[in-house]
Length: 94
Image (cartoon, rainbow, N blue to C red; front, side, top):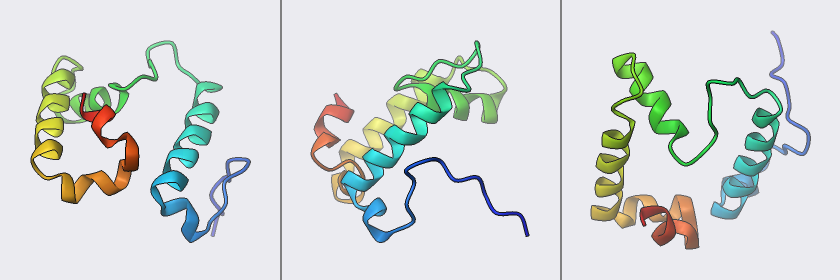
């Protein structure tokens, strides 16, 4: 069995699943990915939605619609989503 590559500073603990731990892990992963950045990939707030749009429709043009639908759903059900972003939840919805 092949062990997955470990990103420097990545620790497998329950703390990484807290909102703060998730944000710290995301920052480390983003920094690592930026060193591998492809010229067609822009790492911004819409990158995940562009990826979903590409995976679903083979085009990036639906990314803004997917983001809008996602934010509407998150705003309608903060009890389900706020814990993942902690204090950053209102800013993420803005």
